[in-house]
Image 1 (cartoon, one colour):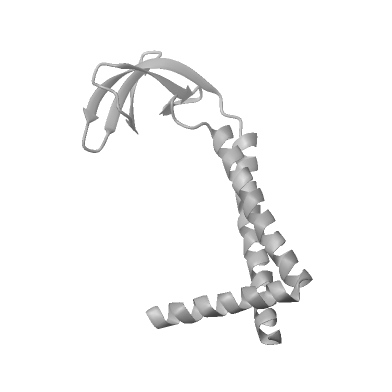
Image 2 (cartoon, rainbow, N blue to C red):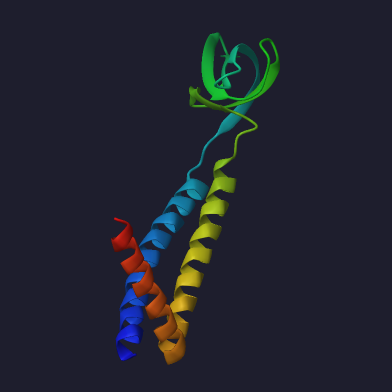
Length: 152
């Protein structure tokens, strides 16, 4: 039975290393999204084309004397008004205001990173704290590995 617990301990260590790398990358992306200053302004745009099969929408919007076009997805009929958010220093970089903001995306990524890392470390804690847990988890891992080999 020591083989099963040893297998699971190695498996837990590898899992912690992978979870740490993925978590650090996700946290880095979150920090970048939060810290990057994006100056956005809004303007009213008009839906110029809509494809109901693909839900592809083209929106035209005007900033100063220039007209820009934004390809997006949505459910708006041609001629409808929509709110377009654009970067003040680069008006061609725009999105519809209904899409997720960078800060919300950053918070979602940050939350996912914390949950992934916490669950992985919690599992590793139980593997090293309880020999019975390690043996059961190791047996399940080996059974899963064998089943994968048989399927392939």
